[in-house]
Length: 116
Image 1 (cartoon, rainbow, N blue to C red):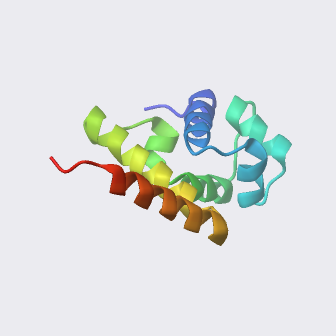
Image 2 (image 1 turned 90 degrees about the vertical axis):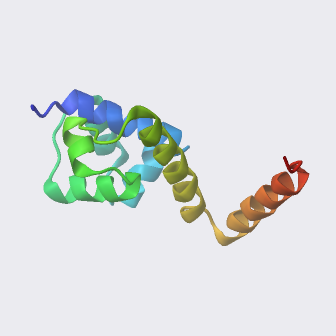
């Protein structure tokens, strides 16, 4: 296994986009400048252990996946887990007013389902 800053940046970018967040938002959450975070995503700079740990926590990514791209689950399970994690992250990062709106929308959709 080899550490590749460009691939790490690509994984961060893909997850950030899936989470519906901007680079500025992520930079603020890890208490770094937007330019520095953009450089991380481009792979043009490395990062401290503290920054790596903060990103792994905010993006909810295991370190071995973030650093090496190593996956332990089969592809479908990982995709489903990512989708659930993205939804949870979106809810957790929303304001209280937005969380209530999300909950109402989910309840509305659920009430329209026809039992099979």
